[in-house]
Image (cartoon, one colour):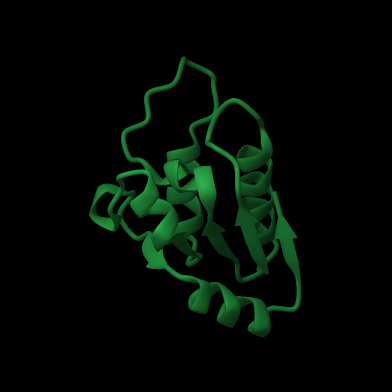
Length: 113
């Protein structure tokens, strides 16, 4: 499964819902890849501090990675926002349109949030 996130980590629940789906799919034995584009590259920022009881997008990405999922962040989107792959949650790789194209061709199902 490929899940493409386009929205910032907070403000809307699109990235949250996309990651909820990723985690649920993994719990059912599915292989999951998550591609962060546009403002969603900020989802990969480590050490996010949220109010008690509020979801933490960075921790959700760590869960996806811990279960064997792959997460990539669009390189040009990161560059436009002053981010580097070294500044993201450990395990997130720098992606590209070529990588997204490859993942798209190889997966049977794509969800975009």
